[in-house]
Amino acid sequence: MAGDRRGHGPSRRAVLAVALAGLLASCAAPDTEPRSEPSHSPSKEEDTMSSEEQAELDERLFTAVNDDDVDAAKALVKQGANVNALDDRHDTPWLVTGVTGSVDMLEALLPGEPDVTIRNRFGGTSLIPACERGHADYVAAVLERTDVDVDHVNDLGWTGLLEAVVLGDGSDPYQEIVASLIYHDADVNLADADGVTPLAHARQRGQDTVAKLLTEAGARE
Image 1: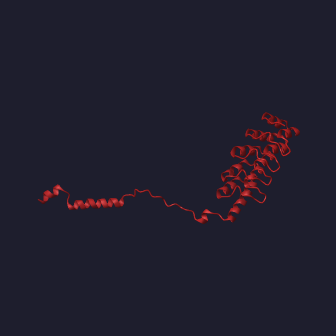
Image 2: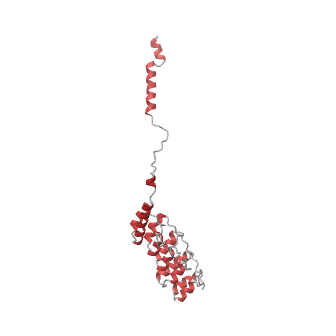
Image 3: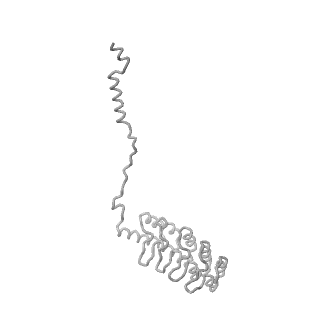
């Protein structure tokens, strides 16, 4: 009987309903395959900067460094200003920090990856003018935060240690500089172009405390 056949298996209508439900489910099911979000590839104009734009940024950075405008310098570095750009005096923004002695500016320029091997017009790194000018905090910071050569010799035949002694006055800032240089393994016996050692220069100038620091570090005349 027809009723018995319906009782033993699904009706045609039921089969169609199940098939339709499956079709709808497959259409509505979320795509399980991972999809990569469309990435934004900067255009050539966005990705590169014209030489004129770069020069303008670099000039503004030089101004900020000379004015010790730390906030401006940070912003310019983020925009792509070059901390290693050379001006007509063969200075870079980084080299200028050794002259000004600004530790805050040093920190501001570090994200720009300064090349600490670039030399100024006297053949020196930023460490050497800082030693000459008595910028004790800067000397300590640049030795701690970078791998600048503590024994670099400039075109005059002087290291940072020799400049601190020969051009310094033996006062507290210069004593601190000498102590920092010694702590960072400066060669206390590296003589100048005439063969005069830092200890000999210190004694000739009556810098007793500096001479004591050098002697305790193994310096000889």
